[in-house]
Image 1: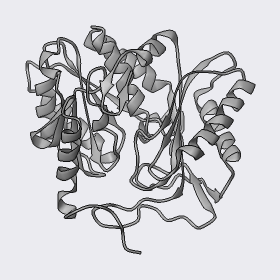
Image 2 (image 1 turned 30 degrees about the vertical axis):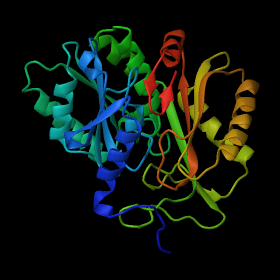
Image 3 (image 1 turned 135 degrees about the horizontal axis):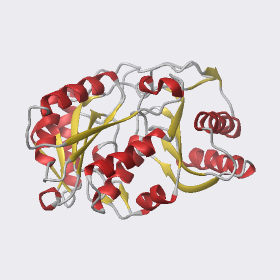
Image 4 (image 1 turned 90 degrees about the horizontal axis):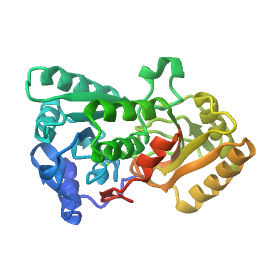
Length: 333
């Protein structure tokens, strides 16, 4: 079946979407060389700054969260592809305002290669202090004891928020990195898909599922998660996924959590709210309190139908940072 998308030349996808994004949000961001989206207030920053990277095609992630209280520079790669390390080095040097830079990288092969090469090159820069934090919270493809093998999913977004708030309050680079790492170490995500996406530049399907199939554990780009099964109801799916997250994090009665349902592109808010309703009931039965939440699209995979369910263990400090002010195109508090 022919792909139907409102695009022009596929070779210009990333350039054109970033141009449009920057024009639509020119009060908050500017587009600079190397496909970098920059916080317009960066020049006045007297604090730790935050740089991240990732492929395009996942909008609003990641550039939709550039602005005060979250990301200072997003380095954007082509569709579903990591940017090159030199662009990241340049961005980190630009972001350094004398207080250091936190560099947040999602755990995918291309991003990790770029991240590691970037950190290696930065060792030659005498005037740049940078700490890297990796988000790796997909419980489907590796156990917690092998967390370095876990893929990064929507967990990067709340990590940006919490780290950005700590930076805005004047915390040191070491303190901001500690807060980000503590949050990252206490989060987990599980994704489900009922229909795969297509690559917008080629029209190739990222994953194919049968008419009555769903897959719990599918990765960001259609990678298998070993959970292919017959389609379940909203309540059944919610119970499978919420129990998986609770077990992975060893959440106990009396604890507080953040819960995010992230639609991946083609699943309606109607469906997400029905699933969220069941999640709330299941957690209440177990004596677990939701103190922070979000239901909507933060990180999409084109028209993939499904969602990512995210959970994180919360404490008073992390909740304070989550609720702190921010002003970005796709998150405002």
